[in-house]
Length: 142
Image (cartoon, rainbow, N blue to C red; front, top):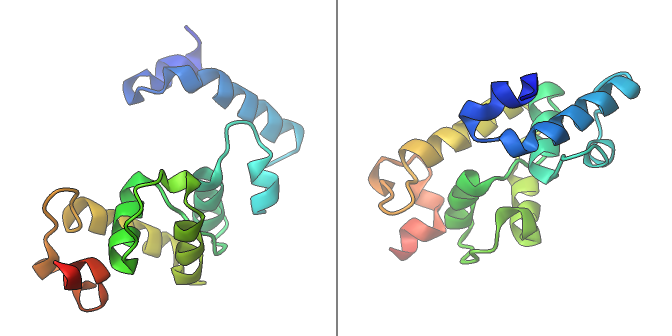
């Protein structure tokens, strides 16, 4: 078993070991991690979420960051009924792009993740405790 596979085994990502190796080789070959969405998306195994998260967290550049968990918060807040996979929902990505602030990007993305994990729960959201309840389309409808 490769070192990468051994390290990521507890995360359940062993099948991604080869992709991670290819990604690491490419980053070394180009002398670093790119800082544009277009260049990041050209890297092996990098999709919209990883590209956006890299731009927002590593480079503090405005970029939408949407995964399955944060998609729940955004869909409820904006009143989107779609259950399309977050990666394949252009309307969701466009709304998140507009909603994402131009500064404090790390804090913003961590706050949305925290909200999804503690308040905007999948089956029984805790709307009474939510700081966004006044403007949330889902809360108004339920």
